[in-house]
Length: 384
Image 1 (cartoon, rainbow, N blue to C red):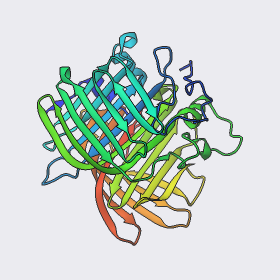
Image 2: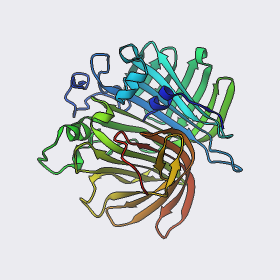
Image 3: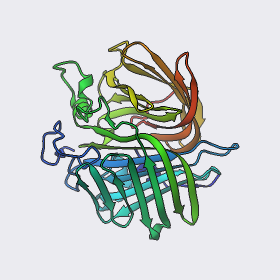
């Protein structure tokens, strides 16, 4: 199978001592920033990063790979090594990363520099323009998120559009805060990594799921499919490898359910973290974050399973994940996410696209699509 990937492209596909300010505001105050807007200042004077991420995939058919497309509009670099391999002080501050796979299994990756990356808004409608690479627009009611790719020098052009009526949300709640600090006990003393993770790493999900249409041309090959899509954005004042050892991000759309979950091991901390979101036909069943072991209800349990050796990256990897949601009333939902296409594989970062099955325990079961990441800056081994 041809893999049109070079090191910097693969690593840039991710999802400072001089802190980035929240556009001059205290980090915990959203004020008039639209949900999908620009939250922090990112430039060459700091180590901050902000990015807008969208992914689309469709179920595998007749033994082929599931077609997929992942697009990230970056300001700054999420890992220290990325800045280095991208040119150090000469690395572009703004760029767009594309990766994914065709249904024949061919994996692709592109990193397209932009002369500028600007985000503007009118009310809650948000537009981003990465000059020379592409643009995006999120409608005021967040019913439509669209991307236009326009980089003829790289042989890249086309469009992606998500239509969604699923509820937008933050990591721990629907409206209160974009940060994870509500998972902490009152008056908790934090180390440096915890201070960044819980209070300055932001996450806002505009489109948790919805039908997607993809029609792009990549180096003369057309990638065209309809399926399911997802869009969120993140920001942080320092690079991930300075405060995080291990991270799973999981997203799936299964019948009438949209779901996501995160597990994080923070550098120098015993406070392992997770967050779970589950909605059914537009109604939120769970939207919480918590510390592992801190509760028995209103939580998600994230369990990797299987063991395989991935030769390109030289490390052991999992076959999939089981997500078990326990609601406040004790109701339980269980989903099995299985990787079918490994679209990124570096020792510290893997991404899969695949299938998902599940639903309410004891109730009707459904099938759908999944995408999940394993980010492992500490190179902590996985042994099943």
